[in-house]
Length: 363
Image (cartoon, rainbow, N blue to C red):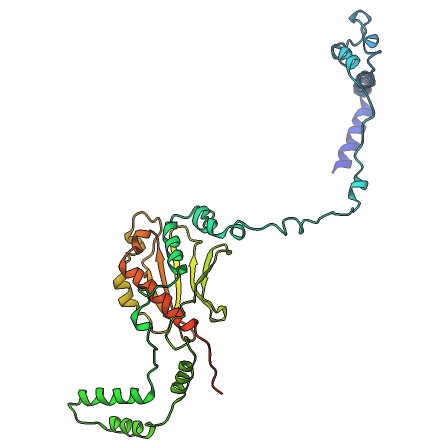
């Protein structure tokens, strides 16, 4: 153990006085070296202290020659004329306590920029058509002229030549009696003119309902009594308005905000502009619409640095009496076809015919 080694060492020194004297001499030399080092440090600190408190008048007087075996400051010699020509004064100190005190008009970090508006709130049209920054921070690659021409077409006032013929006259809903008659005709045609049991029941039901007014027919009569507000008739004063004030969505709504939006143009993607139209139910069929627009898949377009085999034309029946049509666009030339403008025209006026008429609730 360590105490055993220490006792053995003390016994060895006691037996050998010469070794003990050598150790004491070494200790004395070490202490002498320490004292010399401390003196040198003191001289250095004294010299530095003298240099720090020197004034212009006493800089040169504190210099000593090498003959006196003292420190000669070349720095002092260089600083003397600079200090003599400079101006001196009291230095103002920073009072942190005084700065921390609250004053009138002070703002917190949460208040900074609260009233500042985003660029899409200042000039939304310029943001979506000129600046065009995607949600990933990169510039949008889809063609802005496509969105611009679509918006201009939808905001334009309707003319007689643009309104589809099928929507000038009233759109009368099919009554249960008419449906029963059609079912009887289809069944008899399929069976070679021989009525089946089901068709006989339907014919009997249609006879019982003849002469009676249904709820749908009653609503239609009330609508027709309102001038200019018949079912399917487009109000010539109805207009679509555009809201540009969102970051990644351009919204188009009709004259009645409570009827909901007509178009949501999603502009936040880098490569594709997504158009979501909201039209009355059963207005379009996905297969026929996709065949008429003839849009290639994303994988077939080399210029688009993205992948996707999804349909670029999708039709979905949404909640309520509405249908949602989604179309993705990259170039204007893809949609600058008679088929697309015919689709857009039909979608516009079918929406206005449904969203622009007054609601009547039966009592």
